[in-house]
Length: 322
Image (tube, rainbow, N blue to C red; front, side, top):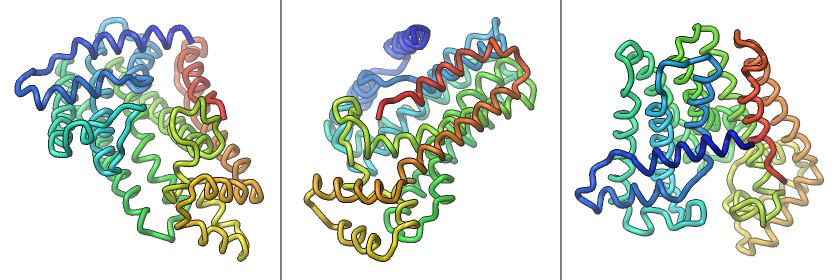
């Protein structure tokens, strides 16, 4: 997807030139470090693609695209602290390289700078942008808290899990697209459909991530295969398997909860998933959200040809190899 690479390069150039202070260096060096470790930059690209979709030719939206990416990175910095994660994209996390206090402050600055970039537009868009962005920011925090609460619960339902990933992951994709629609003066109906397109793609993407964590090729996945199983994470696959398991299978699940022989644990749980056919169920669930996303995109009142870039991006996101 050549156009995606061009947009990624554009975002990287803008991040390299980011206007943040340099003093005290102990506050801003971690920010420069974290932004330099890369990423797909999908969220800011969604802002740019939404403006293209609605034919915006007069309003520069790069600042709002950067706002979305900066906010996303703020959430990653704080998530890493809460998860005590040593690595992010294979690189040492801020709280490990420096300390948790510096990481908290640097993350806070990222969030504040995100708002500064968000508001670099005409005054007529301020209220709508702030309403959309603030709603998303609160929901992301709600989703993160739900995810942490789930660690200590044995009664998490699949609808609760879907709501958690909607809040923690999907609403940011929807907001990125909605921001592009707002600045492009799209109709209320089109703004809602582009937002719902993003949310449903986000749900499909996260369920796919659950599948990949168990079944991906380790050389291509970029992180430890089976990590969710090792940490007893309540993913879509796990919750579905526990709901469908018979008494004997439930006993196996319980016996593996504290198994510290990780390769053995991953293999045993994966075998249970295979017996219960939860991978196939998860793939069907993922396709369902993808199809819902396409229905919302179809409902947007622009020519079908103009939707091609978003369709290609959605297919790219869904095309990660297992």
